Image (cartoon, rainbow, N blue to C red; front, side):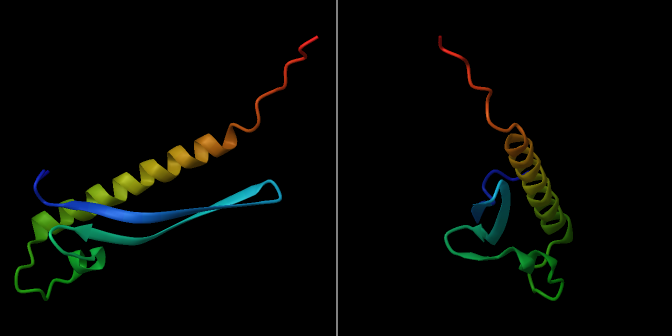
Length: 87
């Protein structure tokens, strides 16, 4: 992992309706001094394409979003805490 490689930014939208929820993750991009869509990591026709480096970036990004969505789904399943009778 290269700590100077920039970072991946994204937008997450949470929507709630009738006891249900959904999340949308989009706008995923690699930010350095400038940024570009992460789909370029899969473009092997680039002059500076580095398979080991870009494969690592893709794997790290997938793991991050897998962990994020798992955590979000786990949190959303907790439900409302039982109300205590204060009498």
